[in-house]
Image 1 (tube, rainbow, N blue to C red):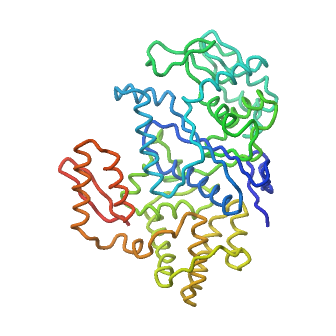
Image 2 (cartoon, one colour):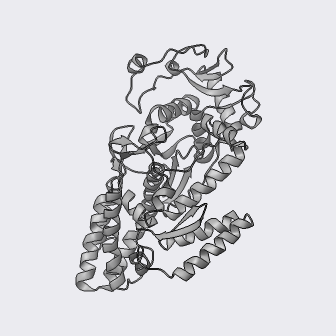
Image 3 (spheres, rainbow, N blue to C red):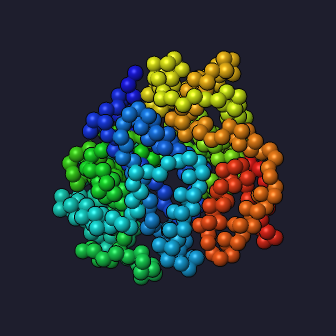
Length: 458
């Protein structure tokens, strides 16, 4: 069976064929970077990490672009609160994100454009929309998109203009011609810092969120590319507005496939910062081994809502130990995957069916049972290789099995002292490297006014 992907645009599974044979171009909406990333953000990045890994395992060359929104109301507010520049805040938070997701084995994208680096392209796109009658400058100074002038609006979300009109909020003193219109360029406010403003033909200001992704995706992947992804919460209005902007400007489809991952839920509510029911990646990694967290996120299908709880993470750790136990008892051979082998063929069929990780993980457990029964080095090698397609089982089995067990306390104390020395001379990169190295070994550091302590991750 060839790869099939659920396309949100058509609402069905469709055979996947890239525009350019052998090369997949994919854009994923990344983080608005003003704070530490939470486990819901990790779920999104993990979903597309697995997706791009499987495309590579399937023989494709992948150009994977995941952007960073580094100018936004929340970013400006946080920078002002902290008394630092916007760039200082976003650099700090981007470094923290990279450190956190690297521990989860999430591979870097091919390109990671920052919105502030593409403002000229955004202004060019706005100019083009204005010339086509799809954008106008309001009395407020903002430049808005005229939603009703784009015939295809609502095709991604399935929302009609009448439905949207029924739930609209009346625009008050914002100069919009229609309440459904959305902002492309925000006029600068006197209260905003200077590093939140760019010059333009429309006056000083900054881009709206939606135009950022239209400009960055086009600049890095072209006017039409293969896959556009992001969290389900972005389907409307963000992705709907991207389609209106990009297709309104270029007259061609923005992406052939639209892929959306499901939410992480806590007590049946979506995990989000606005609700205050979130756990940062760092908080979760302070209790659990990074690969346990990765396994927890992967074994649920990417489109299914994922329920977060310590019970589920404990279960994930126990399950992952079963796989690593098989590899600890039988040394794996190193060989390329033979996809005609029955276990490999089942794994491939699962992944080719819209990246079916639950079924693929079930194959890993069946294979581990067979490794335990036969002590076959070849099957152990296949178990490790198939796990690698998901970013799993590549660590030292004994090290994982001992996570949560005893450690060389003198060595840990030495590393804590080395980290304290690095922090004392403001070598925070080295201090963070030591913290990450210990965490990778299942050792969690906890900083407090009284000093640094440690405990074993589960």
